[in-house]
Structure formats: C-alpha cells, structure tokens
Image (cartoon, rainbow, N blue to C red; front, side, top):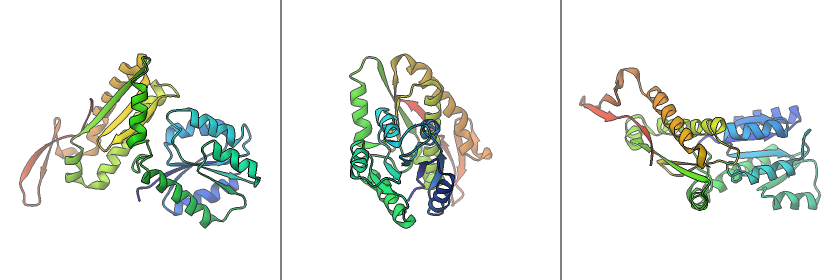
Length: 268
C-alpha cells in the first residue's frame, strides 16, 4: 500500500505522541495539529489521506471543525474519524450526520483504531474517492467537481497533463514515478495555498491529469506559476549527467543509447 498521510487533530500531547509512534510504525506518515486553527492550516499543507479529530479542542469542537472541512472543496472528501471521551448516541449521530466515517471512544484499543483507520483509507480508495498516491479526490468525484465548476462563470477549470510520465516510469521504475506524482500534487497544493482561495479544488481525475478549480480572475497567474514551478523543479528528478536540454540520454541494458523526452506538465 502506498504510504498514506494522517492528520491527527488532538490537544492531548501524550495521546498525540502515542498515535504518532504507533501509526508511524504501521507505515503511515503522521502530522499532529493541537487545535482547530493549526488544523485548518495543516490540512491544506499535508493533503492527508485521513483525519483523526478529537471532539474537544481548546479553540473549537471537532463537530464545528469537520463542518468547516466539509464546506471547502479542497477538504470535503477527506475521510474523518472522531476521537472522543463521549459515548452518547446523540454525539455519534451528530458526527455521522456531518460526514464522519467512524467514531471511536476513549480510551481506545490501538489495534482496533489501526484497523478502523486502515479500513477508512482503503474504502476511500476502493470507492474511487481518493487517489492512493496523492490522497487527492479522483475519478467521478473530481469529474463531478469539474462539471459543476464549468457551469459557473466565476470559476476556471485548469487541467494539467503530465506528459511522458509512462516513459519516465519505464526508465526509472514505479517508485520514482510515484515520487514524481506526489511532488506534482504537493507543488500544485503549495501554489494554491499561496495564490488561490480556501474554496479552490485540487484533484487527480486520472493517472496523467491533475485539475485545479479556482476563481476565474486568478486562473492566469495560477496556471503560469504552476508551469514555471514544474519546469524549474523537474530536472531534479533526473541524474545530472543524463540531462540534455529538454531530453535525457540513457543507455539500455544492451548498451544502446536512447534520447527520451523529459516529463512535462502542460495545460490542456
């Protein structure tokens, strides 16, 4: 399974560190936010595959925080599990009505929590909601967002294609290809965090395509910055001696020299 990213929103430092150590040992990359304000920032930086939310936070409650996440196009599809000391039926119903995927009462069994986390992440991937490599909305979810945005005059739909991705994977392997795809997703996200607005959408509708939905009046600067950033960073994914302009020179196992095009990110 591709390493998934978890965002733990928990103000109890002891519990948070216990989860970091335990879930980290199970192959997850874990980030902690101790309150709602830092969670709002972290969720846009980390692009988590799943959120673990404590209901009782120092500056808000988990229900209000999840409501805000579900109102934003960039965060509404992230699976969420509540962590709480409450075990009341009404609290559980409230969380589920807000779109939570599960509800775990403290004190919890770590092995059970791990299975619930794993099941929620795999379910989102199986139902083609989130891309397993990037955590971004994918498939029909991304296409529905694109369809709705195209009906709004104040929205722009920017589709970026990773050209020559297949050749890159053939030459350097699937792991290197995954690293390149992840880099692209994080770079797009950073540009949106800097130049976009909170309700902008970022998705990966198919293997070679990323989509950005943003305000129409920001489309030019966002698309230009994305292309320039990728062109500047892409050569770092190749060995220095292999690069020849916009191509790479490699040798096959048999010793044959090949000139292949570098990966490019193009606005469709």
